[in-house]
Image (cartoon, rainbow, N blue to C red; front, side, top):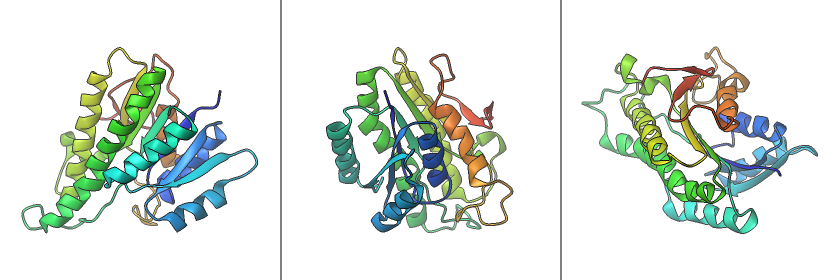
Length: 232
């Protein structure tokens, strides 16, 4: 039976590439984005006879929007097997935490942390019903406390919080065949990563595909890049 995956923030960049690779692995993919037109254009570009990709509008910072998506999934498919929390913003490169506008910090946390938490709260219960699920949180090495510096303080803090959420939810899901992990795609050539980045979106997405397709004995509550553990 075909499994269903949701990818947030997927109209471009790493999210778009994750959708493509999941579809090529045989998943039914729900590509979501805040901008409806851009999301529909992305689905049109990706859809082929062999790719099962549908679009649904989603603003991860809006609880009503998340609920609307959950109701759609429940009505159309009953359950969801894979959730990739990819939606993120980077607004404060070059800023200093002691000086930057708190509105940037709050906006970053709303998308990068609270958005992912809302998605987990909405869709992990559907995974519990099936006793199967894979949650992939797209994090960053910038969120690693082991090597943290002053880079993009709000963004870095939000990714640390995302990693903490990964650990906490993993402990809460003991006894279920549901795995939640964080991964760093590396510095990728996207609108966020800029054209100077050394990695392609295809390479950056591969770790997410690995975690989305983990076997039952695979890792849970980890932080990875290129299928290798990263320091928290």
